[in-house]
Image (cartoon, rainbow, N blue to C red):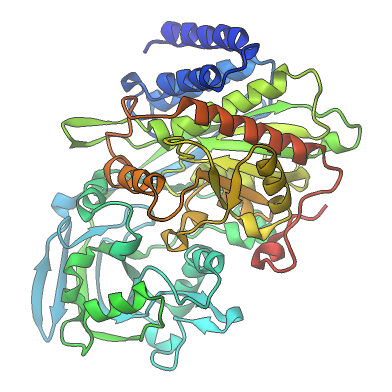
Length: 554
C-alpha cells in the first residue's frame, strides 16, 4: 500500500464515518470499525513490526484519522510545531540459533540440548556470550517478602545460596496469594530479586495449563528479534518517581524450557517434573532445591537500534478546572511482522491483536469529536508501539508522558478485546483494584453487559497488556476482553481462537467476527470513558489494593 493509496483510504474512512454516524444499527457501526481493521491488518502492512516502514505506514493511517476528526496533536513538538508522534528508542537483539548452543553438565558429563526442541534462548535482556553455572530450582520464583512469601530466600534454599547460580522456576503461584500480586512479582520485583541475590540467569518453565498455544509455536517465535528500551538519560529520575518502571540493562542469561522435556532438568534430584507440575496446577507450595547439574551455553546475538513512535491525540475538556486532567483510551499498533510460516503464510497480520483495539480507539475518538458536548476532563487517545516486545511503548509513555504525569487520571486499554461472539459479559483486568470498578459496572448495567474479573489469573493477563504500565505508574487502569462462562460455546470459541490464531498467521481478515458486538463494545467504552471524564471525583486505588502504593498524587 503506497502513501497515495494510504491517504485515499484515510479519506474514504473519514467519509464513510460521516455517512454512517447518523445511522443507528450496530451492524453498520461495526462495519466502520471493521474498515479500520481491514486497512491495518492488510497483507501490505506486513504485520506492523515495531520500527519497520510498515509500522510507520500504519501509524500514518492512524494520524490521518485523528486529523480528520479534528483532534489536536499531543505528541512531541518538532521545530516548534506540535506533532502526533512520540519517538521511542530501542535496542534490538536477535539470537542466532545456528551459532548458539545449550547443554546440561552433570558429574563431568555434558549432554547437548536441542534449541527449539528442548529450550529457546531469551531475546529481550542482554545475554552473556558464554556461561557455565549451577542450576537451582526456586519453585514459582516469586519475591514477595511483604506478603511473607519469598521463593528467593527460603529455609530450604537461602538467598545466599543463589549467588552465581541459574534459577529455574515454574509459572504460577500458591492459591492463597492474590492473583494480581503474583503477576506483579513476575515484573520489576523479579529483576531486582535476581540482582540482589547475585543470580546469573533464569530458566522459566511454562505449565501446559497456562500456555495459550503449544510449544511448537513458542519455539517458532525464537526467530523473532527481542527489544528493550534504549538506555535513557532520564532513567534515574523515572526510577526515583516510579520504582516499578525501573529498567534493567545488565547481562542476565535467560531461557525458556519445553515442559515436555523438563524431566531432563530434574533427573536424579529425588523430584519429578510431573509431581512438581501437579502441585503447580493445584496452586500448592513448591519445594526449592539444588538440581545438582549445570548449564553451559554459548549465545550468539546481533544487536541493532531502531526508533518507533507512539501516537498521541487530544480532545480538550470543557470544564475550567477538570480540563487539566486526562482520561486515556489506548491500544497497541505493532504486531509480529513477517516470520516463520504457519499454514503456508508468513505475514502475522494481527487483526485481533491489535488492529481491532486500534480501530476501537479510532471509533471512540470519532464519537467524542463528533459530539458537540465535550467531556469535562480532556481525553487522550494513545496508540502504543512495541507492546509485543514487552509493553515497551506504554512503559516509555508512562515514564515519559507528553502531558503532566500527575494529570493522568485513568487509562482504558484495548488489546484483543475479542468480538468473536455476542457481547453479554466483559472480563476486566484490574477491576477489583480501583474505584473504576463501580463506574465500569454501572455503565455495564446500562448496556446490559455483565462486568466480571479475570477467571484465568494464572495466564498472567494482568501484566501482559499495556494497562499494566499505568498500574506501575500509579494510574488506575482497566483492560477489557469479551467474557464467557466456563464450558460454554463462548468459552470454547475463545480457547479455540487462542490455540489456532493467537500469534499466528491465522489472526487475519478471514476469521469470523461479530461486527454488531464490536460496535456495542465501542459504545460501552465511550460511555464509560465519558462517565469518568465527567465525574468530579478523581479515580483512585482502593485501600485494599497492593498498587495503591504507586498511586499518582496531585
